[in-house]
Amino acid sequence: MAEAGDVERTPQATTGPPADERVVGVGPVARVLQRPEIGALAGALAVFALFTSTATTFATLDGAAVWLDVAANFGIMAVPVALLMIGGEFDLSAGVMVGSTGLVLGLLVTELDLNVWPAIALTLLFGAAIGLTNGVMVIWTGLPSFIVTLGTFFILQGVNLGVTTVITGTVRVADIDLGDGFESASKLFASTFWAPHNFTVAVVWWLALTAVGTWLLTRTRFGNWIYAAGGNAVAARSVGVPVAFTKIALFTMTSTTAALLGVMTALTLRSVQAGQGIGNEFRYIIAAVVGGCLLTGGYGSVIGASVGALIMGMAEIGIPFSGWNSDWRFLFLGIILVLAVLLNTTIRRRAEEARRR
Amino acid sequence: MSAHGAAALFEVRSVSKYFGNVIALEDVSATVRAGEVTCILGDNGAGKSTLIKILAGVYRPDEGSVLLDGEEVRFSSPREARARGIATVYQDLAMAPLMSIWRNFFLGSEPTKGWGPLRRFDVAFAKKTAREQLRHLGIDVRDPDQPVGTLSGGERQAVAIARAIYFGARVLILDEPTSALGVRQAGVVLRYIVQARDRGVGVIFITHNPHHAFPVGDHFVLLNRGRVLGDHRKGEITRDDLVREMAGGAELDELTHELEELRRGE
Image (cartoon, rainbow over all chains, first blue to last red; front, top):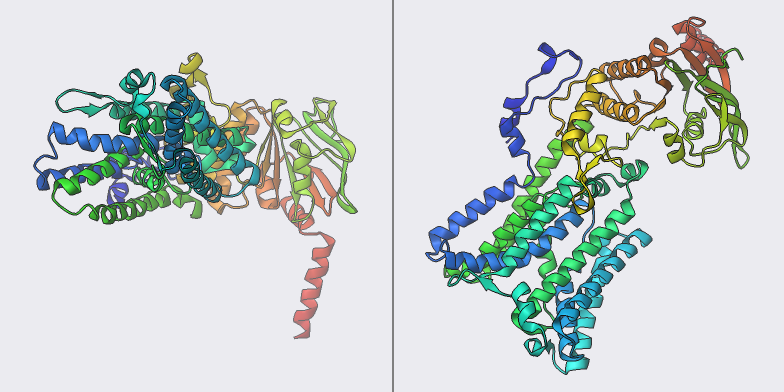
């Protein structure tokens, strides 16, 4: 990529009027290579090619329905996690929150005999409240969100286990499908389409959220604030960007989306384990990083994060489809993460090189 | 002081600022007219930063007054000063390096189109305007999508200056815009200052470098230890005198003398 950049460099001194500045011309090829999601797209193609060659069922519609469902379950969360990361913050409680909200829905339906629809509304409110708390805590204490949300992570993990055990006597909430309104709610959150391949509706949610997230980031004022809050919060504040509001809103969006996924998971599985979702927070972050988000904030792409989720979905399914031991997927995850970080660091260095000139 | 004409656009008159028992500024006056450049010169600790903050509305003076269009004003915040047309470009430039030129240009004041949930950032307008405004300053950005971090120091100053002018600055306060730059880049920024002046903006150029101030300034206010050491109009002072006065005048003579003594002693 460095070579491509060098070819595009045409010192302007010979042509343009302000001969004292070296303006670097940027051709269409270099511009495409500078997009944050380009590495993830190349990676996705490579992974797809790999598993197509190792597993005969991988590139079929039936196979795609399986790995797209897994990808969707990562991708739905990768969208808000990427936005949050571009805004300069982390949410380590994003994984456990899916379990917490699923349990809340399950308990509302099974213990309080609530209709599923109002239970969903309450669950989403509960999710929003957790994210609001995360955001307010981060802004108010000035502590790194890594620490604040790590606290939330453990608190929720403890509550999930403790409350579930006290109320149900087991570590799971079951029989959610016995609640009123389950059938109609399942149509929206947990159904499949295109028989006999049976793509899950989660895939549609994922694509819709990716589109909305991309629009929000690249085409709204709020999106500009997200970039600035992560890129240079002091500067953003000095020109009137409501940085605190932006970050709190991002935390709230993350947890509300986690609640959405919690609802979908609970309705799909019809029961929720107390440990549901734990460990996935890092997968969401990996998807965002593979998709081009910088860990330091201020740069990234929602589409990239979704492509990152796609890579992970393909790997999760492609490895067992190929007849390999599923444990290898961790090795795979680690390798693509390291490769992505190396690539992103190069991009960032190039974008900032002028500062050290 | 002869500089306080009726046509002054922005003026501080005999301002003082104390922090506890530290005198940061005492009896300092300076003025800028539309289409003129007033240079505030001073070494480290001379009180330049305090003066900028008074001009920008961050501090209020303990004594003396700030006048805009000849009327006394008391800014409650930098935001209010900005709303009245006083733009301050600090050294950090208030930009996010990884964001594109057009995103930085409109940061905090994004133009929108559409209504309700479809209200959106008018990207085409932002790109076009950022490019046009930079062209007015004589800088041709071929690609407004370029991250600001890839621009040279001088170009980044230009983006900050163009942004301030576009958002209605009548007075442009530049805090050491040339200090972190090489000779060539500093020259480029001086040209932007002249261009802003030619567009009718009153420029307050804060610097510790008399060589940068001399070619562009219409007034030179020298600060030393919080007081005005000298106030000169263009043509009343030579570059050498400005450098000498800036470097401490009599003190420098004394130093030169001492150094010569030392050399004779060897």
